[in-house]
Length: 123
Image (cartoon, rainbow, N blue to C red; front, side, top):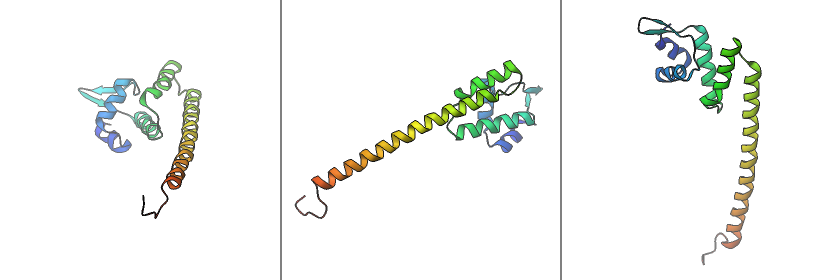
């Protein structure tokens, strides 16, 4: 199938698909003259890339999986699971930081109320 159809099926722009290919995230894209020909496997890969991006992965974080796939000639599920677990760890750290920030903001709010009581016409 041509890039326009792949774009419609995956929601990835043509520019993004070309970018994925340039980065090595898409391999073995055949050509018919000047046109690239994609198959169902490419649709799956592009869909997975889009899903990973929507979950906070950077394209550079996906490269080790693609490199391992090319080297092992199979999808490296172990590498993918490790990447997901690392992303979960990062998210948990961010959640803890956000919780601490929330506590500090609550403290600031209370300090403001204590220093500048509400409904006081002298403030």
